Amino acid sequence: MRAAVVYSAAGSFLLTALTATPAGGSSGAPGAVAERNGTVVAAARAAEAGIKFGACTKEMDAPGNLQCGTVSVPLDYAHPNGKQINLTVSRVPATHSDPHNSKRRVPRKGALVYNPGGPGSSGMYFPLVGTVPEWKRIAAAYDLVGYAPRGVGRSAPLSCQDPENLFKGPSSAPTHPSESYKRQRIAQAKAYASGCAKRSGSALRYYTSLNNARDLDVLRAALGEQKLTFMGASYGTYFGSLYATLFPSHVRRMVFDAAVNPAPEQVWYRNNLAQSAAFEDRWADFREWIARHDDVYGLGSTAEAVAGSYEKARTRLAAEPAGGKIGPGQLQSAFLMAGYYDDYWPSRAEALSAYLKGDPKPLIEQAEPVTESAAEAENSNAVYTAVECNDAPWPTDWNVWDRDNTRLARVAPFETWDNVWANLPCAFWPVARQRPLDVRTGPGELPPTLILAAERDAAAPYDGALELNRRLAGSVLVTERDAGTHGVGGGPNACVNGHLDAYLLEGRLPARHASCAPHPEPKP
Image (cartoon, rainbow, N blue to C red; front, side, top):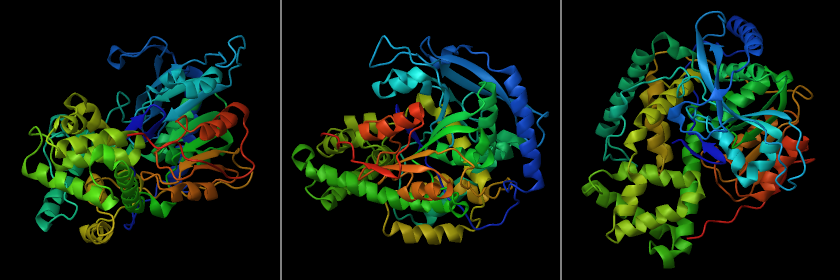
């Protein structure tokens, strides 16, 4: 459930719980004091060492203007002089070139660090976004900096299973699973959790959102920045908010795009329930759009009729997978992307229409797993699982999951059970879980920050932006009304981008919460 586009990134996130577990995230706990002191030690060391940027690896296949380096961070911040791991970092220096006035040299404002979400997504290619017109003003003033968080890519990579076992298809995706199917998925979740422990060993417990926030402060110091300018999307807003809570005096400017609900009782189990409900609404938006263009797609003139066409395709694929590879599970994964980004609406609708008319090729092209990326996808999923399972208590009784999601699936069948299977390893997690930090800053503790949100975002429901706004004193919320793209900064909405530029380039925010009209719907 993770995906990225050039201006944003999506991360499926989860929800929190019911079982009591050791603290480790409470700011007053002895362990937290040691970790805070350890961060100071690690940041001082990084400031002295800096980052030696040079050519990127051949595997990245990156253009020459992208520079790469590494920064060393402690595996365990309570022991900053113990085992170290290297995080890979990328950069494109500020261009100083005003896109509207070629004769004007733009002064450098510092480094803008970006995280695309996940957990498990890499931001190594982010600096290349400076070539996109919507980003050129920001790229003129800032060094654009991306990085692979701990566990991701070449940054002390995590693994939970053999990548060759990842893309096995075709698969089913029942919206109302049988008891035998549930038992099968429970067994798979237990095996996956066991595999994470077996393949990662004692290091597994240190892959957490709190450590991601601490790593961010070490990266700040290594870049030579006294104050951090940071933009996080989706899950990146969560550990960004942890950073704001832990290190408010180290913040220069922060942008939270597609904000995750940071309330401790939501992290992560209940956030996933909210996410599944929101995807049902976004699935309805997509179906209504298809219905308005029935003359193009012929899938039905009402949202209900379009749903019938989709179910017809599911039934047919269950009986005879397209190309021998595409079953209902692959169809579901492909159409879930339309819940993240409406850019996918025309291609997905066209593929469904063509399939039902006898041409499976477009659907196969869009839904077929890319086996060449199996290792990357397995790594991303391992980090996602480890971070979310480590971060917070989860229900350990299957009956709780079954009760909550059976009830939800009656009104939100589209994504509910797939979300369960993605997160179920957390019910059987072999590592002690933390208690989530209470994200909160008082008046004057934190510089003003900017929150961006689409009102109908499914992956990060809008309530999360409202909650983050309440918790970070002085923050200002900019809403794209009646829109649901997951991550709106630097995208197609000029109004949103105007607020983003004003904040990052001038430190200027609206006097009060602002709203923007939605970007145009895609054309069929």
